[in-house]
Length: 101
Image (tube, rainbow, N blue to C red; front, side, top):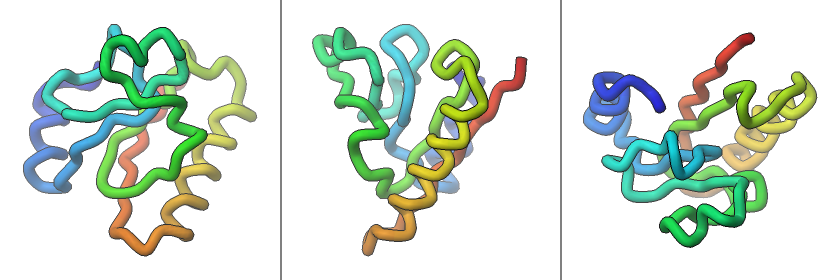
């Protein structure tokens, strides 16, 4: 989970309302919507896999090794974010937090 003060700042000043590529155990409950790549998390209000939906609006995105073990997955996530933003007619910003091992 991201530090609470960072989430608070992003919600207040960057209008973030979504969390992409989170999991049940580490999503921030102050964000009303989150996406998980784990189908079991749908039982806990998670939307489906973030990569199967467009990145629109203002969101934060995890890219930690616990989700994606190799660099190729991380590059794919970044390309998916960029592609969604480019194709969207809605204002879009994704704040990606990259964790290195």
